[in-house]
Amino acid sequence: MYAIAIIRYRRPLEDVLTVLDAHRAYLAELREEGKLIASGPMEPRAGGILLLHVPDDEDPQSCLDAIRDGDPYVTFGMAQYECIPWKVVTGKDALDTLLQSS
Image (cartoon, rainbow, N blue to C red; front, side):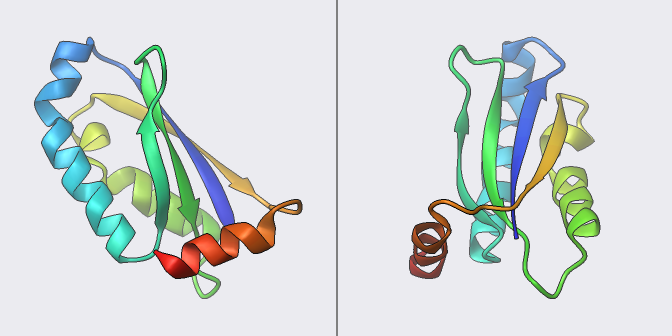
C-alpha cells in the first residue's frame, strides 16, 4: 500500500529550518527502511510532501502514525501531518518497480 503525507508548517520558516537537518536524517532512515519513496518541499515553501510505502505486513494506520510521530518536525512542534492512504491503480507497476530499485 502507498500513502501521501502532506506536511504543513505550523511555525515560521526560519524556525522550521532549525530542525531541517534532523528532519532530513529521519527521512534518510525511512528510505533505508523502504518506507519513503520520494519527498520534497511544496512551492511556495509552506510544507512538504512525502510519497510513502506501507509494508504489507504492517497495519497501515499504525505505520503512518509512527512515521508522523517520529518526525522531528512533529516532535518539535514545527509541522503537522495529513496522511492519506492511497490505493494506486494507474501506474502501480511503475511505482512498484521504482520502490524495488531504491
